Image (tube, rainbow over all chains, first blue to last red; front, side, top):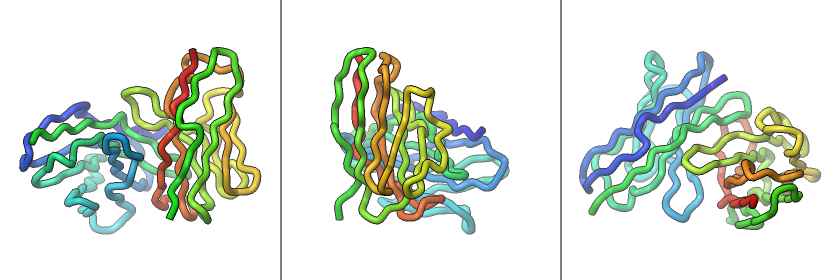
Length: 111
Length: 114
């Protein structure tokens, strides 16, 4: 069975700080990896996804993630966060019709 | 265009009652997913439809849970004999063709079982 682990439950940063959120998955086969974001009062929405090819994936709003197969990791990064990045972030792995999500990381950016 | 919609947005019921939760996917999307999200956790997969058929229902927790999608569009998640542990936000998502295609999520239905 596949599983996803997000190590940081709550991260607090000041504006302009750099962000890295950890995500590790356990599944030995080919996976598709996603980061979703849920802004306060809004739906879950896709930030970025990795299927194959370049392991460095760029998404919306300046976010990027790097797939490291040897470490089963797909960490999310942003060089300089803004107050508007305050949200909950979920990592997910997809395989054969089923998506498995991590428990999420709440990011609070202080102005 | 219109996104995924779910009704009702909130549902409060008593233990033992029957509830139905509705999902209207994005028009033309063939794949539809149901998830359950408990407080402090990520969405948990329940069932995946491709067209009218349930391609994978392995996430349904027990036989009190059932979902249908009779015409390949709107889906209804049905919960019989509700229990307090069923309280959660039930999310629906749709995607154009299924597979690893991007899923678009609805706002969810918050179910509270008293």
